[in-house]
Image 1 (cartoon, rainbow, N blue to C red):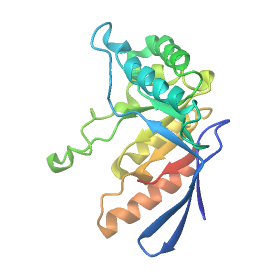
Image 2: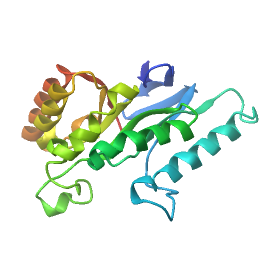
Image 3: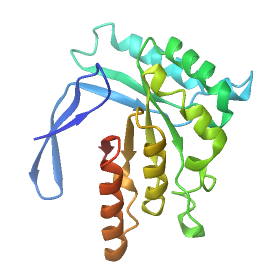
Image 4: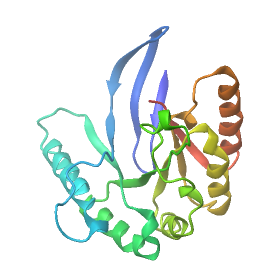
Length: 211
């Protein structure tokens, strides 16, 4: 039995059992989590506030679920939202607005940070290089822990040292490592990825996302 856990007061999200190699059978879904995907943004207003449209839309879907028409499943019990943390000192105010419109369901923020110089990886790693080390990004990142929010980091294995550096700088912030640290595939690189994930886990990594 494998359990996927998310933040704070939100309970176990999904129970599933591996019944045979390469097969996963879902037995009970207790609750689900929404992860930002760049949808339903506002079409007007300040750029830094446009992602509020996504959180507003998802919260509306949650309210439909609360009607009781969908049995006992608590779908979208938590929200991973998007706020551009490169806005620095402005990020705190935007985070607070997301928290307000989410009816308290906002659990963390994700900024895509995967980056690599190989053009063939751009579809997976198209973020600006060095985002996790960027001064403005870190100024915005500093607002997360005081608001009780975590951070979902989507990086690839060659960036795991940057994740470690970020965790050292912000030991009070919960960091969830998406896609198990983005291993690139070959045997040597997978060994490197495993070492990198272990280094991150020794810091303040509180979970991993398998997808």
